[in-house]
Length: 108
Image (cartoon, rainbow, N blue to C red):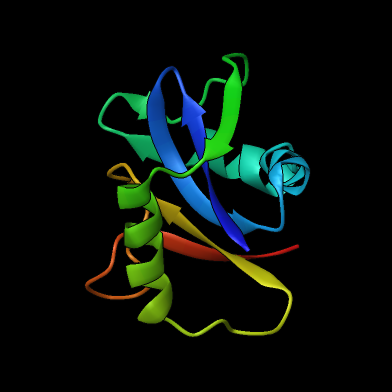
C-alpha cells in the first residue's frame, strides 16, 4: 500500500493510503473528501474553493514518514477505512487523536 498526497495550488493538503494511483485519484474525487476540503478551513478560509485543480501524487519520503508516524499511533475504528492526515493547520476542527494533527478515518 502506498501513501498519496492531495495537493491544491502547490500545497500538500492531505496524506492518505491507497493501493495505486488510480485508486488514490478515485478517493480524492469522492464526495466526502471534496466536502471536507470545502468545510475545513485554514487561516485564509476553506482549503478548497470547489474550482481549483486537485492534484494527486505519490508522497515524498518525509510525507510518507509523517503519515506512518500518525498511522502507527492510531487505531482504525473499523475495517475498510483510510487514514487521512491533514498536512496543514485546520482552524475549525479539533484534532481527533489528541496530540496528533487533524486526522479523519474515512470509509472507502
